[in-house]
Length: 178
Image 1 (tube, rainbow, N blue to C red):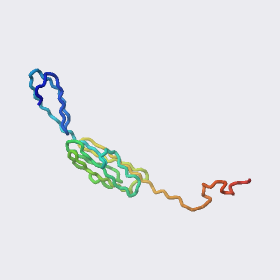
Image 2: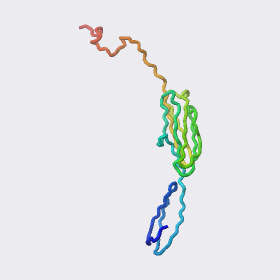
Image 3: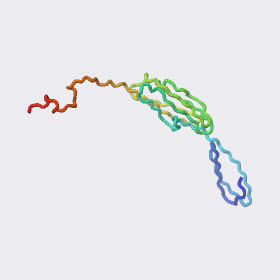
Image 4: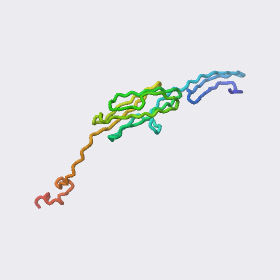
């Protein structure tokens, strides 16, 4: 309620946490009393995919270590309404995703664990996408796995003829005719 306003044009801005802002123009005449009802809309759910530090992410990298088979990420509802979400994927090397669908209320987070099966990977880098859909948009999370065959170490045979670090001065047989 605003009392003792002078006649004129006014802009009213109303904001409330978790609701869309409302702006309205009014014209107030001399001695006029005015009442306005305002409808405010609750903000929709907002899908976010984050790491444990609450930073938005778009990729999980599993690296090349043979024992490194799990990664986690979080789905967060950054909106005011309930978020309904679902994860789909197609790669046969994804062994499991801990939770593939759920419902999150405002401000709630769900931790998801992805486990891969390195035995079915190709020798090259493997890339796939987790598709995360919701009742208000979607996100894609790229999964990358670098799985390379072990490189055989050169044998240590201590053969001096294979030593390329010796100079001609160190080896009299390489000096030729003097």
